[in-house]
Length: 157
Length: 268
Image 1 (cartoon, rainbow over the protein chains, first blue to last red):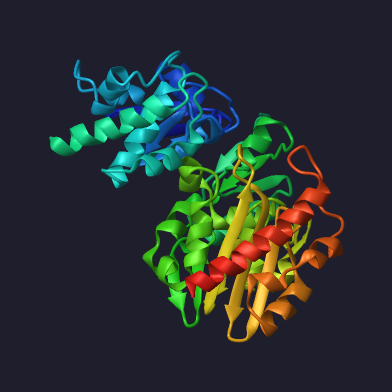
Image 2 (tube, one colour):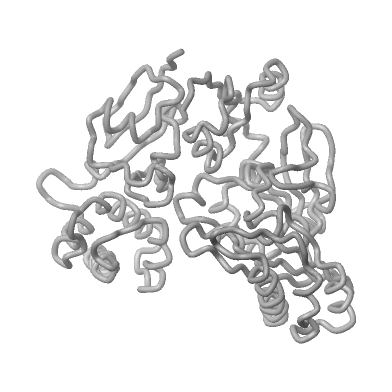
């Protein structure tokens, strides 16, 4: 049995008929072709699938699309303004905050959620916040540097 | 996942009617355990009754000498609540230590308590503070709520609507988290109400339990050094798994209990 669901994704209204068992991440990737949101572990541990729902970060592999009725969703595709990268995206590039890049969309969406409520986090606060995002390449140091560099850019603007 | 139907009622009565009408229907709170369980096909409900649309299950309020938390209050809301941080800072700190920020944005206290995971954090607070578990049918004392591994006093079709946490004079929660999942390998919540001391352990056994003998010793003298090696020796039937063997967990119980008492002293 399919259910109608309406939501806003990266500022655009979306409506679809979904099976209740459709995960939000599968809806984003397969129905909307927004493949920037990744599926890593599929067990809500790795954080590659983090998106924002009504301003809060969540793991989209552990939510149902049908639960998103009326929600405002932002994915990694919704961060840049045209060709201008979001300060976090620019900082990940500048600080070499990625190698293979698989975890990067989740890292950046998680970092963006942190900076929303804590605009100038300490290194410890960044590390604590990124607890739910796993990177197998970088050893995290450059990711933490990138989040703090982005915070400095945003705060200087 | 097997296919299921989905409802999101706006009223508690409607949710209860849906659950009553279909014994295979399951309530959905934050979904942080249920959705992974469905993915693994460890459960196959006919219908999910999403409780997130029911306003009566939300909210944080002070009621006399207690803090009332609606069952659908998220961990992030508990840890961020100025009311909770002021009245029971140990409870706010516990909520802030669950999972990760994204899990805390979705997971709820009612869901966690109803699930009764042996390694969950909230059961230690429910028992140590002797919280009242308020359901759609009755009030259940924290001491009587958890009955075994993933088992509680809840009857089929009975939903937690809120939890009432008595405000202690001082309290602390210390856990030794699993480094990957952040579930408690061992967690100890200690609370002081006047001369009464209550201490509950999560993560170590099939279900949360109190350290009754230790509580009595702490009532005589509230100091970490009253918790000696006899505490380890008295523990049996502890969990043994790939994360920690039973004797290591027993050792951790004593160590973390001492740390909890020390933290409680520095908090008061």
